[in-house]
Image 1 (cartoon, rainbow, N blue to C red):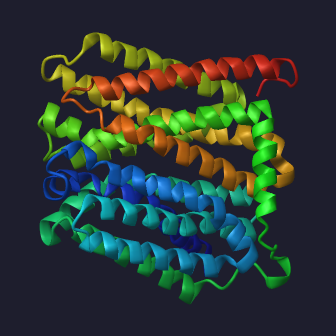
Image 2 (cartoon, rainbow, N blue to C red):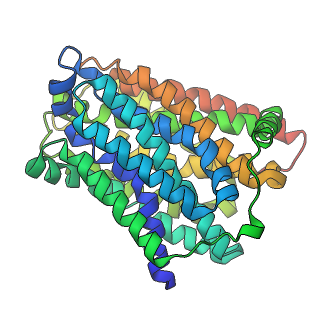
Length: 398
C-alpha cells in the first residue's frame, strides 16, 4: 500500500464518526414526525446516543487492539456498527433506535481508535505527526458535505436509507483494509488485556490536578459542540425557516471553521496551549453574552448573527479540544496509550450526558442553546484560570 492510499484509507476510517453524526441532521424532522410525534424535541437524541456509545467503546478499543491486533478490532467494530445500523433501519420506535445508535457508536469506536494505532505502528515522530495532520485535514472536510449527502439519500431512499448508507460505507472501508493492509502489530508485540491497568490509569489521571482540570474543560468544550449539533437543525428550521438551505449553511460553516486546526498549529508554539484555550473560551463568552442580550434580531441580521455565533462554536473546538488533550497527556507519558483511551472516553461520555438533556430544552428560540453554551464557556474559562494558578506554583506556563 502506498502512502497516499494509506492516508486515504485512514481518513475514511476517521470519517465514519463524522458521517454517522452529520448525515443524520437533515433526517431529524422526518424521524421526529414518524417515531416521536408527541415530542419532536427528542429526535436529536439519536446524535448524542451515538456519541455516548462511541465514548464507551473508546475505553476498550485501544486495549483490545493492543491485545488482539488491529485488524481483529477493526473487523469486529465494523460488524457491530453494521448490525446496529441494520436495527436502526428497521426500528419502529425511538427507544429501539436510540439503543441501536448507542451500539453503533460502540462499533464506530473500533475504526476510529484503530486508525490512530495503525499510523502509530507504521510511523513515528514528525512523520507520524505529518500523516495524522493530513488525515485530520481530510477528516474536517466530511462534516461539510455529510448533511448534503444525507439530503440526497433521503430524496432517493427516504430517511431509513441513511442507515443503509452507513452499512455500505463501513463495508467498503473494512474490505479495503482487509484486502490491502496486513496486520501492523506483530504477535510478539501485543500486550495482554488487563482491566487493572485501566483502573490504575483512571486513578493516576484523576489524582493529578492539571490532568483532572483539562479533562473537565475538554468535556465542557465538547458538550458545547454536541449541544449545538443537537439543536442546530431545529434552529434553522423553526426559527429562521431555512430548512432547505440548512445543509449548505452547515457545510459552509463547518468547512471554514475547520481552518482553526491550521491556525492552532501556527500559533500554539508561540502563544502556548493554555493561552489559546483561555482566549477562545473568553471570546465564546463575549459572543454568547452578546447573542443573549440582543435576542433574535430582525431578518436578515438575526440569522447572520447566529451564523457567526455558530461558526465560532465550531472554530473554538479546533482551538481547545486538541490543546486540552495535549495538556492532559503531558504528565501521562508513562501510560500514554491507556491515557489517550481513558481521556477520550471520559470526556466524550460526560459531554454526551451534558448535551442530551440540554437538547430537550428547545423552545422555539435560540436562548436555550446560546445560554447553555454561555454557561459552559464561563465555567470552562474559570477552570482554565484555576489551572493557570495551580501550574504557576509547579511548572512553567504551557
